[in-house]
Length: 339
Length: 285
Image (tube, rainbow over all chains, first blue to last red; front, side, top):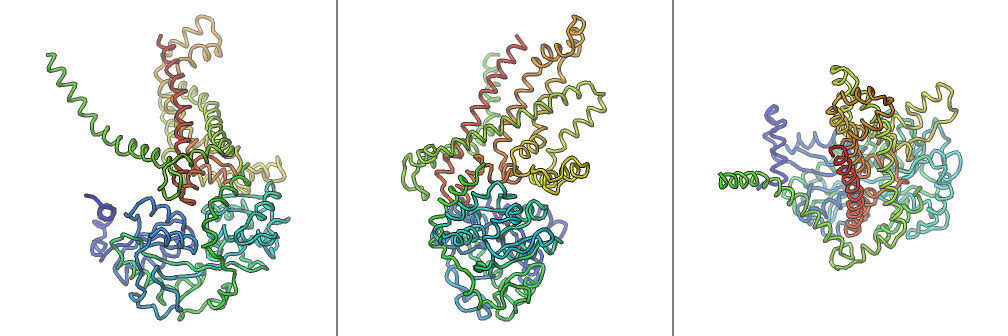
């Protein structure tokens, strides 16, 4: 009987092990998800080689947005296509409710004392924080001050929008809505205001397409996170990050072990490495700009906050309230935005 | 001899068993599963019922989505025929060496990943892309044209992406046409246009129908091209299926949308096949 792992091992053996005998002696492998774009770039460049060097584990990265990860594991029904999740708060709650995680034992992490209390629980461990705000091209546009500027000239005609499919998209639309009388559970005013300026909007795309559209000059202002800005800047794109006047959105990003995986022990080693000083130090400076969770790693001056203690001052959304409403919002977004 | 013939027929039938089993396991079973899942009311697939069908078909917006999806396929078929048919005629008149070169050019897009082809079109059609740069450089336009995230841009890119699927069956059929027929038509006094419409087009109809069928089925289901080039303001059924299955996790609704796509595309495909059979009968009969 072929299993996913035996097929992967076979493919690896056929493809490379015969040419690189060292690979054949790895202690194991791990398939972990990562977000497309900045996270994928950073984890391929920094984390995968370190995991190989320190734990002799081959890390296979599967770039998937959080919601896609949940969908794939649900579809696989007990035979997860990967061993470790990387999630934002909303999808994390969906996965907990769906029983998609193995019970997590934080004590197995040697670096546990190095992260703030409460950053690891029975579900998983927090590995970074994300800050969401507005990104713009300083050579084409003046800096926007807040969310409402996005719907005015000169920004609106260069605006790139994405919908409720991702955490950063949902959070940003909620915040736009709040400026027009909306609430956490009612982003309707944002859709009404967006609808008024829709013919002027430069692009409405899928989340994964937005960095490419910005890079190609199809749009010059969009809502996104600081990591995407840092990655695009590292590629020579003219882009700057702005914290909106009403406040930027912040949330933690967590890692979890997929229910039913045979590689739980390797997943612990991977998570331990990720929160360790070496990886966190490497991921903190440009072009990655990941907010570190390790207490021994200082935040860099160009980061949106000086320490993680400031997270409380940022806008935090209650995803337990958002999740049940999101399907309806997506339908509404489709109808309002459709040509 | 008769028994030997039967045995041989039985053995030949056995040869088809692996394919039939693969077809049953990989296509028929998932399709039946899809039909089964569509008859559940809730996201957790616990309450059987018709609610998902009623919800999907109770919303007029979804009729527009189905119509737009089929219309996109029809537009792509029209443009590939308009550009592809003359190209196939040119192919017929080329030397064998040039035919090989043209065939390579036609097949080349199939050798590239659809993702690469699609992103290349962003570079071509973008605000600062090749088309706008050339037109602005020539002074034809003063402001960049909006080509990306429009149906026009999507149809242009799909025309290039799907062109091999039109040309390959068309060239295959047209290459088998007897060249003497064209000479005979001319000798009997028919003009080039009359020869084209009364001799070449009817005889090439099976290839044309096959090309239309492939282009239609492929363009209506081209999720990556539709979403990356067209953006999410142009809503087609593949986007709805993706949202329902991988964002909202409402699989019964995703199953209804999927079956709607299968049925609507297959209806058009069946109509084209019927037209193909009719034309084949006309040509041969």
